[in-house]
Image (cartoon, rainbow, N blue to C red; front, side, top):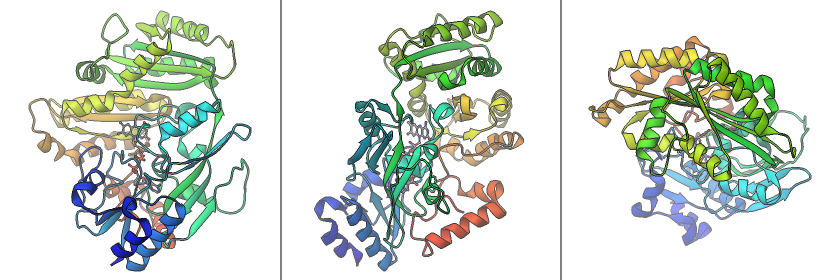
Length: 467
Ligand SMILES: Cc1cc2nc3c(=O)[nH]c(=O)nc-3n(C[C@H](O)[C@H](O)[C@H](O)COP(=O)(O)OP(=O)(O)OC[C@H]3O[C@@H](n4cnc5c(N)ncnc54)[C@H](O)[C@@H]3O)c2cc1C
């Protein structure tokens, strides 16, 4: 039995076996999946983790890596048959090094994204990755899902921000790839294999992340816009004016905003009237006295005159900036409080976002009368969370029972625009069934060969990503 060997390796803090104690690790954030782990392993460092993986490999035991457990697609939830170990990175949370000259941050994989951001800020730098779950999601999880978030429009997603990795492979070997190099053309780029692999190829134990200078000026505005087309026109105006200044450009539907105002205490709309659609714009620069506020006003005045914007509020203080961002960040929680929802984290070319929103809305309303369409998300990079809320008088479980119908309806429109059925949340156990249809042929075959080469025994996160 590996349990006894694991117990003497990891000690009482490093091994959880009682069902009452493993329960918190066994269910996903959305409460779509509940597994039964054989135990939860919580190693304190990379050597312990590697030794634990070797013990599991020798016993043929399967491992589900888990970070903050905020996956939107059940990626970190084990199977129900009690055979899989959860490997939690929660005790590996050291900031290893920060270098303001190289602009790099080296952290254990179990450091939360928020703690990593704070460490960067203390050194006068910015880790330019921001997602709604950043207080809980960990660097290892963020990299394993190639998280995107609010600032992708300017800095790219997690993949673009990683310089080096330390990874424990499925046989327990450690790959020491914590390089800080901006240039390194020495064969295949292994780190990018593990980014977005959702724990199916190995366990990320530490990372070197790229930093940028901390902005000294920020300007944030919430705009009422008459249509998704107007929101896109507004984005284009800001882009033409100064693409380098745009740090975020987010779209929200009127219905989604109503959910937030109704369900989240303390939220208020800083505009005179409710609108059918909204855009949130954040401009930022490290240059002092750059006049961002004036640039923001100039673009908004032109958009107001053209009718692309009907009202706008520019934040006057840090508190107002936070209040505007809260209206956006609470969308997920507000939708949770409204009942059952089916989430479609999709992307299309930026120019096609308005047509996609319109057509997918009509298609879903035709599929299920009374369904509530609440799209929002990162319009600046073509990524919309096209979420559907249950009709008010429908049973939540019955609604979720139609999830494949709904996802397929939305994805038919995504396909029309050559988009992706998973823009930033990944595949997990929710969407492997879609892989053959969307990524079949040579693409899926190569992925399967990579999996077989790195994890021939299939012990890493079985049932996730690949069908
Ligand atoms: C409110 C809310 C808002 C969100 N907003 C965004 C957003 O804006 N953008 C976005 O991209 N996502 C978002 N997400 C989704 C989610 O937070 C991200 O996917 C996040 O990156 C997951 O990090 P985690 O540490 O919680 O990973 P987990 O949920 O624990 O794991 C996710 C996957 O990564 C694997 N994994 C975790 N750690 C490791 C590791 N160290 N090594 C190898 N594999 C590992 C797991 O096995 C699993 O497959 C949001 C989620 C919530 C709940």
